[in-house]
View 1 (cartoon, rainbow, N blue to C red):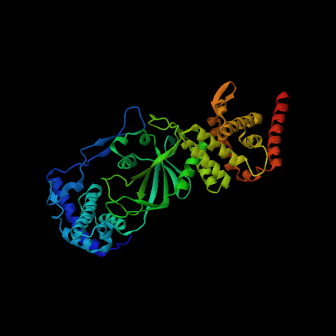
View 2: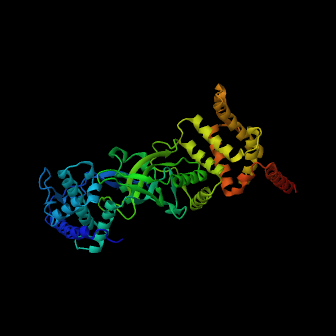
View 3: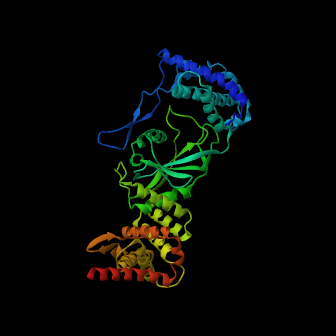
Length: 479
C-alpha cells in the first residue's frame, strides 16, 4: 500500500522514532507506567475446555508513557516533549480533510481545531511507537513502523472502510478448526486472543455472560461489508451488512442439527486499516448486538451443547451452497425455520414453522390444504428413508390442525398443542420443527423437487416406490 501523504509520513517518522526511544528509556529506568483500565485474560479452570474471562489490572499500557504538560496526569514524558510533535499538530490542523475527520467541522473554534489536531497527532505517533515496542521491541524497524502508519492513514483518509465480519456462533461447536462455506465466508475456531479482543467492547459485567462463553467458532465473512467512521471520536456506521450470508449460514447449521443456535455479538476486523489497538491483541472489534439466537438456548450453559463432526460440517457447507441458489419457496422455508427459533411466543413459532412447511409442499394448485400437505410431505420424506408414510402424513395433519385452530382464533387450540406418538406426548411445535428440517434437507438435496410438487403423478410415483420397496423386502424376508 503506497503512502498517500508523504508530508505527514515525513513529519511523523522522526516523531515516532523519538517516542519509541522515550518508551525504551522509561522502561529501562523503571519508570511507573500506568496499566490498562481493564485488560481481559483467559481463565482456564481445571477439567473445563471452554474459557472464562477475568480482568488483569497490571498490564502496562505503553501509550501511557506520555501525558500532557498541563493537567492532573503525571507521566514520564509529555506529548509536547516528543521531537517534531508540534510540526505534526500544525500540519494536521491545517489539513481540511484531517481536521474534518477529527470533528473540527462541528465547532467553529480555533482552540478546538488545535485540540483535535493534537488528539490526532498524539494518536498517530504514540499508537505506532507503542505498537512497535510491543511487537518488535526497541530496535527501529522502519518497514514495520510504516505498515502501522499506513493503517492509521487509511482510517483517516478513506470514506468507506472495508471490514471482515466476525460473528460468534452460539451453542454449536465444530470438530474442525475451519469450514469453508464459499469463497467469501467460513466457519473458524475462535482463538484465545480473539476471545480476549471481542470482549473488550462489552460492558464489564457482560464479559462472563453465557452469550460470550457459549461460542467456540465464528462466522467470518470476507470482502462483503464496509463501514464509515464520521470522526475519530465517534462510532462506526455500517454502509452494508451481509445479512443474507450470515442468516443463510445459520439456516444451514439449523438443518443439520436440532440443537438451538444463532448469533448475538457482531464484530468486525479492519481490512488494511486500524482505529487503534490493545497491546498485541488481534483487531477483532465488538460492534453491536443482533439478538438473533434461539430462545431455547438454556441460560446457564457455558459451553455448546453439540459438536458437529467433519461429515456434518461438510453437510453444512453443502446446504449453504444449495441455499445460495435455492428456489424462492425453499429460501422462504429456511427463513421461517430460523424466524421460528427467534420467537418468544410458542403460538408465533408454530405459525412460522407451518408457513415454512406450506412453502415447500403447498404448491399453487387448489385443494384441501391439510390433506395435500400430509400426502406430499409423506412422499417427500420417503427420500429421507422414513419408513411409515401414513404416520408422517398424520403427523403433518395434526401439526397443521394445531396451526389452523390458532390462526382462526379457536379457543380449543390448547387441546391440539401436544401430539401423541406411541403413547408419548410431544409438543406440536417440536414435531413441526423436525418435519420442516427434514423436508428442507430433501428439497435442498434435490432442488428440482420443489418445481414438481404440484404434479400428482410425481407424488404417487414416490409413494409407489416406497410400497414396492416394502413389498420386495417383505417377499425376501418370507423367502
